[in-house]
View 1 (cartoon, rainbow, N blue to C red):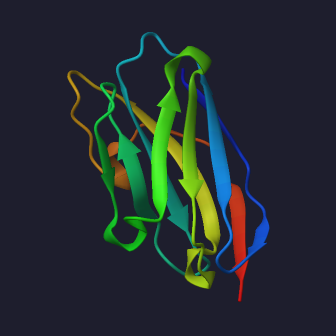
View 2 (tube, rainbow, N blue to C red; view 1 turned 180 degrees about the vertical axis):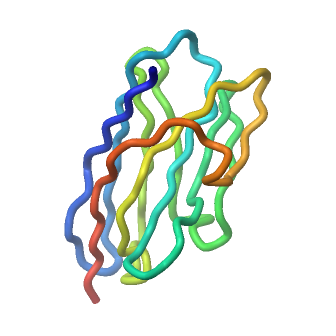
Length: 125
């Protein structure tokens, strides 16, 4: 059973930066697709970014050029560096994982098997 714990959420001003972390445990090996998702009050959960086991990445259009997903396999930790934050980035951010073969990854919340409890990001104008 994979266990995911997010941290790093905070309240920041518009234009600020944050780095979210997600520590994973219970892995059987390193072949996982890892993703970040977010959900604002009254809205559906949406994909932010994902990274495959070989390091390939994908991003939602609304964060391209501002957010960067990365992982440290030695520490079993996933990161999301968020720059130029906007009030519309305010949401609960979730880490997710799915065991994969190869480097295939999807930015689709219904595809992931494991989820963390989330960390709150609030951006004020």
